[in-house]
Structures are given as C-alpha cells and as structure tokens.
Image 1 (cartoon, rainbow, N blue to C red):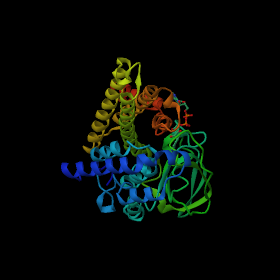
Image 2 (cartoon, rainbow, N blue to C red; image 1 turned 90 degrees about the vertical axis):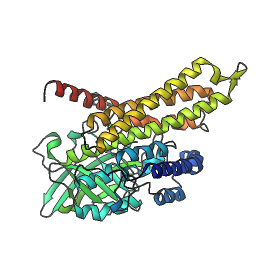
Image 3 (cartoon, rainbow, N blue to C red; image 1 turned 180 degrees about the vertical axis):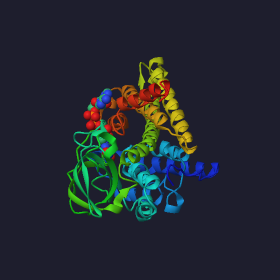
Length: 391
Ligand SMILES: Cc1cc2nc3c(=O)[nH]c(=O)nc-3n(C[C@H](O)[C@H](O)[C@H](O)COP(=O)(O)OP(=O)(O)OC[C@H]3O[C@@H](n4cnc5c(N)ncnc54)[C@H](O)[C@@H]3O)c2cc1C
C-alpha cells in the first residue's frame, strides 16, 4: 500500500449527494452549535456520534477498513463543505483522516493496519500525531525524544508538545530518536503507542485562542516500554513517515482554509446586505464590495490550488511543493479574509456572539501548525534552488 491512494470511489452523482448531505448537516447541526462549543470548550457527544455515523472520521480511509474510501480530490471536496462550520469540528476528526491513519496505512504493516485502521475509520479510536517538542518545532529534525531498543521492546523517554486530540486519543503516532549517533532526521523512527501503556501520561489540556472544543496537550513518556512490533516501517525511516503524512495533511489544512473562507465570505455578504448606513446597505459601497471581491478571488485561487494538489496526489505524483504552496496561500488568504469580514461587520465583528469574531480566532492557527508559513516558504524555495542546480 506504500504511496498509493484510493481510486475514485464515487460517481459524480453520489459525490454530489454526499456533499449535499454534509452541507445540510453543517447548516442544521454544526453551525447552530458553534457558539455553545466556543463558550463551553466542549464538543457535544450527540454531534460526535452523528459525525461517526456519517463516516466523517474515515473519509480518506479505504472501504476495506470501513472508511468512505474517498480519493484526495473527493476528500478535499468533503472538507470544503465540512469546514464551512467552525474548524474545531474537523479538528476532532482530522488526525484520524490525516496524519494518524495515513502513517499506518501507507507505511505500516498489515498487522498494524488490521489492529487500528478500522477503529480509526469508525471514530471508536482517536489518533494523535506526536512530532513537536518543547525545543523542536519548525526544526523537527532536532527532536530529542528517545526510543532505546531493549530486546524485543523499545523504551521511550521525552515530551511532545501541543498534541491535538491528546486528551481523547487511544493511540499516539510518535517520532523518536532510535539512533543518537545520527544527527537530524536520519536517526528518527516512528512508533504506534497505545494510551494505556505504563509510562505514557497526558498533561492538562492547554488553554488556547480559538478552535474551542478541540483539545491539545503535552504527552510525556517516562521509561514507556512498547513492543518492537510498534515500529512503523523500518528504523531510521520515521522522518519520511512524518513528511509523507504531512504532505497529505497540508492539503487537508488548505482545504479547511478554503471551506472556512467560503463561510466567512457568506457571513460578510449577508451582513453587508442587511446593514444600512448613510441610507443604504453597506454592500452598495464600492469599498465594501472590494473587500468581498478580494476575498472571493483569494478563496477561489486557494480552492484551485487545493484541487490541483489533490489531483496530483491521486496520480501518484510527489506533492511536497504543491502541498506547501496550497497550505501557505490558503492559510494566509484565510487570515486576510477573516480580517476583512470582521471589518465589514464593524464593531459587531468584535463581539463574541458574532460568528466572524469566533472564526477570526479559530483560523489564526492555520498559519502556524503543520509547518508555519515561513517553513512552507523554505520548502518551496529550497526545491526551486535544488531543481535549478540539478540536485
Ligand atoms: C493548535 C495547535 C495544534 C497543534 N497540533 C500538533 C500536533 O497534533 N502534533 C504536533 O506534532 N504538533 C502540533 N502542533 C505544533 C505545531 O506544528 C508547531 O507549533 C509548529 O510547527 C511551529 O513550531 P513552534 O511552535 O515550535 O515554533 P518555532 O519553530 O519556534 O517558530 C517560531 C517562529 O520562528 C519562525 N522560524 C523558525 N525557523 C525558521 C527558519 N528557519 N526560517 C524562518 N523562520 C523560522 C517560525 O515560522 C515562527 O514564526 C500544534 C500547534 C498548535 C498551535
């Protein structure tokens, strides 16, 4: 299964029906719940159950493992729709659909796939992806968590930081250094660690700016002993596992940005048409129209980039650069769009009952996680330079 992707799963009509169903679910169930989720910082159990029943934890997971089996192009269209609601709803399912399942699907073995992937697809098992550490963020190759081989076990020690879903997760995909003599990425391996393993603990969830209801926390390993069979792929391949998962993950983040940008534009347009000043709706003023038009054009450009990157992935192409371009552009555009939509709302956009206020906070993180904007720039520019030098 290495490197492969799902073939197109659905004919055009079935895909259109699925997207319609998700749009209805978003409008009728998720958007009305957003304000409460933001205020209470908690996901309603009934909504989580509905998302499980709709297969939203396993959008990208092959049908043979109980997922919807959508290919990349189909999946991003699902995320465009789903992410018209506050991004926290996608975040709670996101690692199952992305970094968590893809590490096992594309780099794990049959036993690992059989043990975990079906439960990830159903949402009965939640995955977390542990790369970042207190002293290793953008410089992921500097990670210091160790996995020492002892007989047919490994012993993990170290701390992972800002781990999405850590409070709920049943499994943790962990990047750890198996060979301390090899600097940087070379000595890193990937492991699956089950939650009830002695020596693994999860700290109190961090309080954060937005995406309330989706939680993250430190994960601490203290002489945490796992079977050697928990290794994903081979020793020293962990960084490749992580980077391959991140290529897909960045396309998914970019798709989230497009979905939420679409919603923000809707909120801005609705308000501009309803709010009169100087005797007519503010939508009739050209300066307001410019904000709407710039936002629409940027959202459309992001959408095209995401679809192109997804189609390339489906063709089996390497998409690191395209994924970085899409993630960088769509996340930066989403930030600008959120800012304009708050501006269109005037003072109302600063008040917490306003969706624009909540979404403005929610989208800030897109420029930070799965590689900051600066790291995407480095990936893109380094590839350009390497290609020119013939490397
Ligand atoms: C809500 C949230 C959820 C997250 N979920 C996860 C998760 O599930 N799993 C996980 O492993 N991690 C997760 N992260 C961590 C996230 O991926 C990191 O925060 C991110 O990669 C940046 O690392 P850092 O925070 O250490 O920032 P730093 O690396 O310290 O960067 C600080 C600043 O310096 C800039 N910078 C750094 N190096 C360079 C350079 N060479 N050139 C130019 N500029 C540079 C950065 O762009 C940034 O602006 C999450 C973070 C957040 C906020």
